[in-house]
Length: 159
Image 1 (cartoon, rainbow, N blue to C red):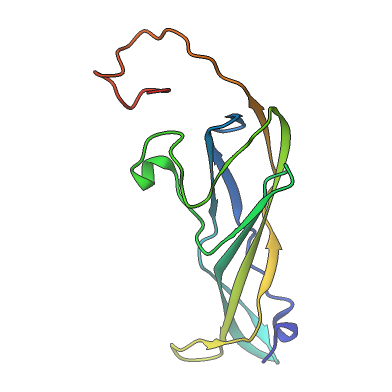
Image 2: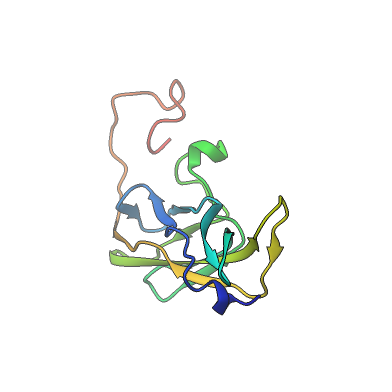
């Protein structure tokens, strides 16, 4: 069985997300993460009813500033990772300059098939599919007064 044999089976595209949503501060980490759940797609393969299981195994970000990263993890939100806003994550990026950027994400999927029974059989190769593009405006930040005490509310923005 080859990838060409399962050409009619396609997973739904994964989605790219970022924190903060749509904006960033030059010099601080912007968190990118993907949602690409495992999917089982039913259909007909070689004239028989079959299922193909797609599992995301690689995430390739192009940050739009001439840099990119390849990761084996989709990442997660700051909250899911239990870290503060603007802390580095395995999938975060720091923009050096202000401006508008478009972020592209390509997700690599491993495919497996089965006809009958519980066991899936691996197919050699990877299927690379694009996720949605994101746009971001990167600006500068200056310290301003806030209406709370960072000692009393350490999870507040900028604390």
